[in-house]
Every structure is written in structure tokens, then in C-alpha cells.
Length: 84
Image 1 (spheres, rainbow, N blue to C red):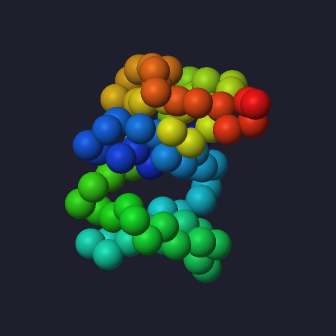
Image 2: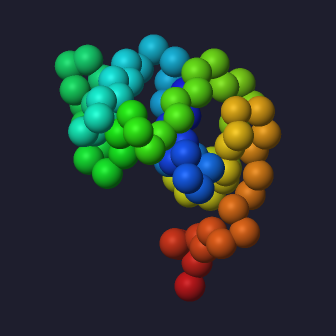
């Protein structure tokens, strides 16, 4: 797996398969080749992309965990959007 992490917060924003192409530029991040989607608020200057992630949490969802390249940590501010 690959994860796209917002550098300033450490939040794992996206978790993608290893075979998915991620292209980060100064303007945005394009996922897929051809593009499946473009992430407009993230770019090469504010993210870290880590490949070969083998230990992602089974209940991973965007912003639920921080990742420092080695360790996953539950985000204490995360609120389940499905919770009432």
C-alpha cells in the first residue's frame, strides 16, 4: 500500500494500492494513470508519500490515523462521521 500524509499534521489522507500511480506536483496530486482523480488541496510541498506500507490499520479511514513512516497512531481528534 501507499499512503499520502499531510506533512504538517502527520494525518494519513489516502491509502492506495502499490500499483496505483501517484504524481505529486507543486499544484496538486494526480492519482492514477490515466488520472482517476486529482487532489487539489495537497501537493508536493505539503505531503509525504510513503510506499510499501504493510501495516496499515484494518479500520483505516482518512484522517483517523497519523503516520510517521513507521508508526500509526490514532488521531485523538478524530470523530466517526457515522456516529450519531
